[in-house]
Amino acid sequence: MRGDDRLHVGVSAWTMQMSERHPRHWTSLYSALLDYGRRAEDLGFDSFWFAEHHFWPSGYCPSPLAAAALIAGATERIGVGASVLLLAQHSLARVRQAIRAFEEIAPGRLVIATGLGWSEEEFAAVGLTVEDRGRVVNERLDALIADGEPIVAGRLWVATSATTAVKRAASRRLPILTSGPSLETAREMLRRYRELAGDGSLPTLGVQLDIWPAEDKAGLDHGRRMMNLSWHNYARGKLGWRATDAQVEEYSNWRTDSRLLSGSPEEVAAKIQPYVDLGFRAFVLRVNYGVIESRQRLDDAMRLTAERVIPSLRVG
Amino acid sequence: MSGQRLSIGVHGGAADVLALADAAEGEGVDAIWVGEPGTAHDAGGDSYRTMIAAAVAARTRFIRIGCALTFGDPDSTLRLSEDVAMIDQAAAGRLELLLVLADPACEERAGRLLSAWRGWETSDGRRLPVTPRPMQPSLPRLVAAREFDDPSAARLGAGVLAGCDDLPARGQARTRVERRVIAFDVASAHELLADGSIPAVARMREIANQWEADEVAIWLHVGEHAVADEVRLLSRIVAPGLAGGDTQWEMLAELGARAAGFGPA
Image (cartoon, rainbow over all chains, first blue to last red; front, side, top):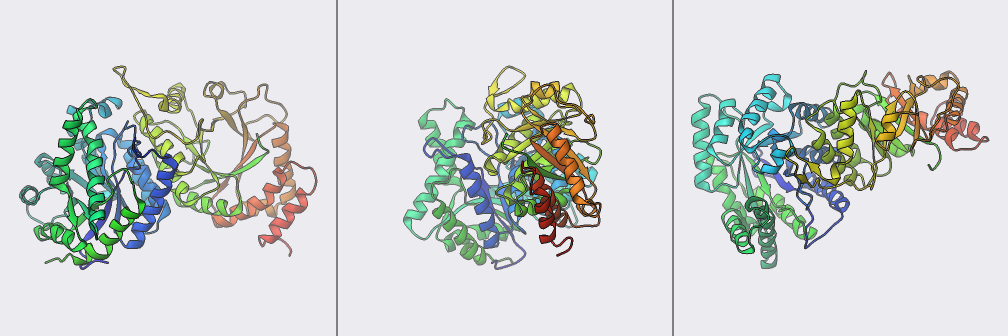
């Protein structure tokens, strides 16, 4: 499916949410999840990714590891990933146990992009504070590396949206997965990584991009609306549940405008290509923005990404 | 309860459990177990088992999935409650829990897990909504114990799974718990057949009936025979004996063994 086999391309981000506008049985969302996992494998994607948050009334995926195990059980080949796994909120024992299970049921297929998290109540629920998170993540990364866990060899990434995270990754020679950066930010992340990691071969570096390919205006409008709605949900978490509608709208529009790469499949490919040219070789392409209003639209976006966006990308 | 049921577990690793699940789904076995009532063979940990249970949920549609939890990691109770709910949703309400409780602290964690969906209380007194919740209104749960009159089972609203070797040769449970399951350890279904399956199954029937058991749970050892073959044979010789009647089961067990390619055609 790809123009160049040196690219790793995954699809994200499944969260199995319902909403006030679209109430659903969670069972139906999890049933659909299995269909999407199989579909992604059939379309030739390299990996299938989940996000993590807790205590959301929508049911936002609280356990990307268990969700990844669901897809591992339903498929044969595709990688399964957590982006991000809020590492400070999972005990080291739990992470080790999960890795061991995956190595037995789906050897080599689990990928973890570790992240910090930002929700104060999520940390409070596990007896931590937001201030603890960097230290705890560092300790857990070091422990996994010291143990020689199999996932450390290329499948344990550090999600980065700040240069402190780049330092965390580079000092341990772990790959980064930088999320939704502008080209300028992405270039700076790579420069910092290469500078901090020093000489020697570098791991494959990854970027997560929000995309929406469609063939007509209705399809494009749908994608933009889905992404905008997902940021509405996120805004309530980020800004507080009592944020005004105007604040939420402003935040959602800003995030959508600054991150969404949409257009015809060829136009989307042209917007991704500069990231390839910068040196990224792993791509996690987000086409699922949480609440799924139209399975047909999402399937179209996955298919167009696999059949027309990715083959248009060129390395070197 | 709705008649005596058959469930099967395996003393083995994750790949063995997946093979067990695939075979059990095809053979009409009521339930399978991820993990076991003792810890002697099992160093995996609760998150190891919930990951396997999730994979089983995704590749099956009909069997019930029993997952053993030991609560050995004091820092993972909330995360386990989230795993459990997601797996039950993905399995459309087929998840059951086997609570293997080494001490009162583990029982306390089990209680916290089972009540998590009424709100998770933080140390500063806030109550947070744990979502999603399980599909089933009350997750079926068993406590692994040495007798049916187990106080922790009563406290947790659970049934009891007891090993046949732990129960006295003659006796009856004094109280009626939610559900009684008797566990048998079988080295190999092929050996069972070689020793004469009818007497062995008759003995299982006798013990299960004596204790008014709702379910017979058999744990197989992984040996020279493929797990799928073991499950195929075991289900065909044991299931007819649990159907509730005194007649026909011996004939059906023999027919089942023959149809599975064992014994004279």
